Length: 197
Image (cartoon, rainbow, N blue to C red; front, side, top):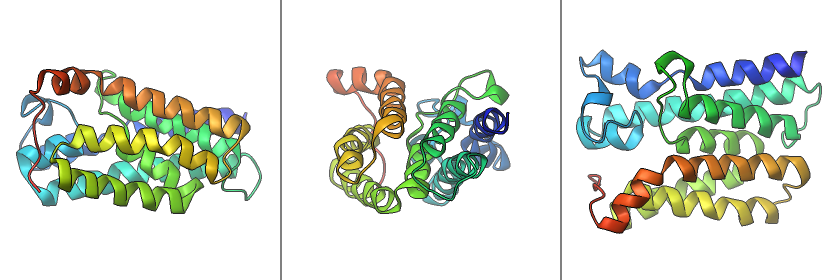
């Protein structure tokens, strides 16, 4: 029962959309501007670096809290216990399909990053650095996100994530890539928006 509640709680935590909150604080509905995506990249393009940083931090902490809830509910102090990854996945699902916003959420990158920060901190830090470098080089957040997320799988395996824990990471990556399907279509057409760096 505790584990079920932990997963449900992680999903609810993930459903708190900081892009919507930060934009509303400034009198803007983020879903009506830019790409319409309630995430860090759209906030960066439409509102600037300060608000985008607030969204990135908030969405990342959702993944951290979700994974932590899963670990503590498992009754162990093992950061790589598969329940931490499963609850973290639930937080990412909440971000992508938030119950508070008619199941229309963001791409899940920052929340997934938070899961890694809790479970495999060095991988989380490496993923953040890689994403920042790739954004700077490509000026396209979707390219940076997709490359970083896909690289997470072999990196997680190399760093010892196995069995069910690795399965949850695979599903998390698959969901994030799926949520980027519109971005992928725009990249193929050459119409994907760039971000200020």
